[in-house]
Image (cartoon, rainbow, N blue to C red; front, side):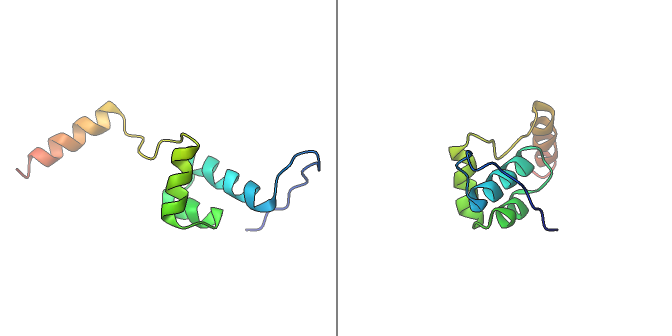
Length: 78
């Protein structure tokens, strides 16, 4: 899909910056997984991961219940 946006010149934003910001938001809102969001941003997985840290976007968003279930499932194999 191709997207065209009209952004005022007063906003100091390159096309690349806009693409990265969109990818970060798509990841943050769980619309895309990390790898696909990195592709949208045009960055490597590692670089995108580092960018998320810089923007204070959590990489792992597990709830307490998710963690509890993971621990319970792991204990079955111990």
